[in-house]
Image 1 (cartoon, rainbow, N blue to C red):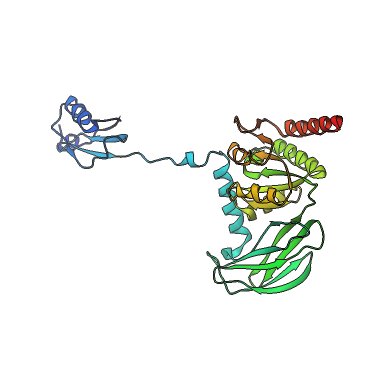
Image 2: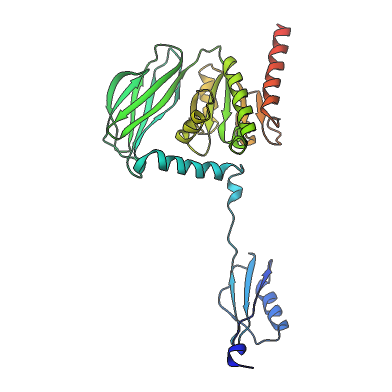
Length: 320
């Protein structure tokens, strides 16, 4: 046998889990008929271990822990697709990532609200920027953002409905909405990542979700909730796909529902994930979820939601 053939490596992989992993590996090595191995690295015994056996004249074993998966942190399968698309969209639509962000707000006619903006530099927030604030295309004031990039302007609305907001600076401009509902309005919340995730992959489902949302917008006041991908990406995607215009609020926890409820608003229904349906249980009776959950009514299509709400209204009118 040539020297080259004697030194050729013959490798195989053995997965060993549970306790006494090191002893199991030693036993497995003895069965190969080679000398006692040299252990280069041993992970905690309770962790799964992958062993690469290198059968040469100087047998050695390299042990390493398999790579962890963090997918369980994001239960929605569409999350990574949405995040990837968000990065692409922001990267192409905003050179250097600079610009102005306008945050959507909700208030009542008799209440003043602080309009909130953020000025951004290349990668991070950039403060000390002069910004002109416009309401319904009318300039109302120029403000200076703070060192953290945030700027605020106290404003009391003069009419109900959706009010257009815009912030302009030398870095660019940003748009937003101020919702001023009537206390009699019935509000439906839509969690965009869950409610529209299937629409990303099917024109048919996209059309069905758009049609249903348009139908709901004619009778109800809509509020979109962005849980993961951010308000700006959500706004751009909804506009691109011609969904009804509505305020988009970043999910900040159940306090979102409690604060709006405290204003005397009618939180009529929720459409989205089981996690947020559970958070809304104390504040919203009608909760529609596109998954199996005990925290709401499980549905498979938007048609089920519109039909259910139609039946609810018909029943309420009959009782009246």
